[in-house]
Amino acid sequence: MASLRLVHAKVLEGVRLRLRFAAAAASIVLCACSAHNPHATGTPSPLPVATGAYPMHGHAPDFTWIAGTVERDLRCVYLDLSGSGRSGFASRIALVTTSDQAAQLQAGDTVVIKGALSQLAYGTCGAPSYRVASIEEH
Image (tube, rainbow, N blue to C red; front, side, top):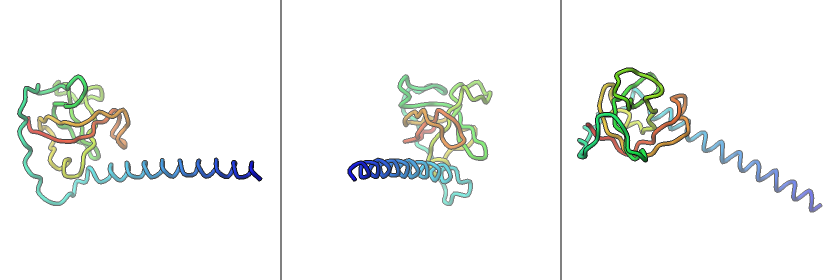
């Protein structure tokens, strides 16, 4: 009887772990779907101007900030860190934004973004990705 309880407890723990994983995955998918809504309502407020010695393109050694040119496609918002003018996967990073933040970013904008680098992919946008905390106009 004790061994049956042990098996039951292990199975229950496995189910709990899978449910936590599924909930985390669902929240990421919901975030990905809502973050890039092209039909977002409201007028985005103007971006604050960056007040620091940031280059036009580049990043902090610890990626606490990144600077570059905004690129957009149908689903994703990227920041080109190279400044080469050529779109390429090696020089751009997918941005994890709220719908309000995404509405503020137009293709061709040059911005400084503060946040944190993530090694995880952001939906179908690719990895690495960058979790946006704040956006400033360059």
